[in-house]
Length: 306
Length: 302
Image (cartoon, rainbow over the protein chains, first blue to last red):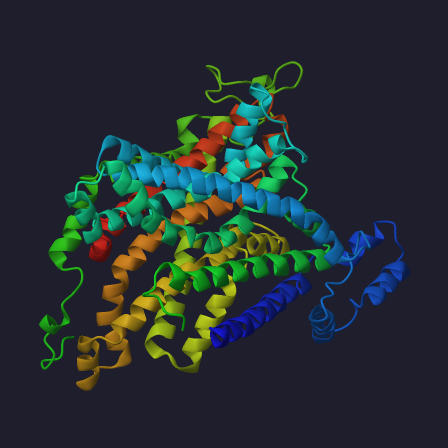
């Protein structure tokens, strides 16, 4: 276990290193010049050159990257070009909002998805099953910005049940969580259905049925706990999906998380912030996958960590 | 050319000719697949006939296309789906937008499929240091938040239709590569491949006559499902304003251009939004049924 963890952590560090190299190279190739963005239109060529030298952007790629990586190793993500504050501070100040949204989204998708999948599996082959599966397909095929705008229009503009955007109370959290949750709910519903169908085929379920247990007891005491575990383990992998969605969903709802931070930074060519958010997202994805792999053998003892 | 010593009987093809001919027939027996195929047919027809269906120019700003106050018109007899905030006919723009979605869906997804298959087959069949390097790179790409990467890439290159297609391909090949790799490496271990090698068949022959035909069902399934992902990604990039650039109509950029008006004119978001959903849904439905038909190990599970 310890050896396994050690190896995986080493791999993770290498992957993060690779992610940083690729992103840094991409941003280096960017045709938009960050210095122009900082200096403004009326700046003289001397000012532009001064700023470029100050930021170290006049150096060749290898040196720029070396500087970045060495400070990264000590936990320093550099300073934002435009806001002049530490990227680490900016991300840390935005992170709670994004984490809150993540919790909300995961709750939505797990509750909606598992319920749909459970009902579909129990009523397998029926019209209910068919319509639930079509609904799950609609969930995974719906573009998030459209879902967000639709929910905003119906529940905020027309019905006035929730605020149009912003951050603060639980009311602000509902619509963006739901928007992010719709996509995941579709996947969870399908996974839950097939996992439940697999479990219901097992011998111990037949035994339970044969000894005359009530249908409810079989479903909730014997089948559900076994069917739910492999699905729950997917939450870790799900984080990648979530990280992709936040840029769009936080934008639609004006949610002050790292998705918005990234989007503003991309528009202003604020390279240190883009790098920082990419690395944090990659970290989240790696940790999510790692957790999924570590819990797998606890859920299914046939799986061995290698 | 079949060598006399190795009759192709030994190969046990996964898709015998009879099955292959039956795929379409079996597809048509499944209601969900039929719904998907019908939607795809409608979108393709709409895209091809776009200039003739409404008779309007997608970029013409009609004088009577706005109210006296300058607001877009709701759906009416002249402009069936209403007009956008520049007074252009929304239906015409959606029809032309279908061209964008389909072109990107086919080109970007085709490219992603080719890259993914090449990487997967190379790593799974030849292995060696190239193989492990390719798969480590694939792992690395899996750790990238896909949308963020696409946004960065789209910002790096000045977006045009073909650049957007390329960006999507560069982001979307990863899943295919992993699936193809797993299948190829298990195929490469099988006896009939060993037998081929023993009688001295070249790598090219093994790859093209034995490995690729076995991978075909997977490639078809992932190719179909991938179009759905591609359509959604293009729409998202265009919605953020870094995908296909106006005035070229795309379902995503129609929403991008009009979203400031969306509280007063929700149809400007919902019609193109419904179009994106319908096309993505159609390819998902067909792809899922195809997987069911072509992959016997998955039968009855989904």
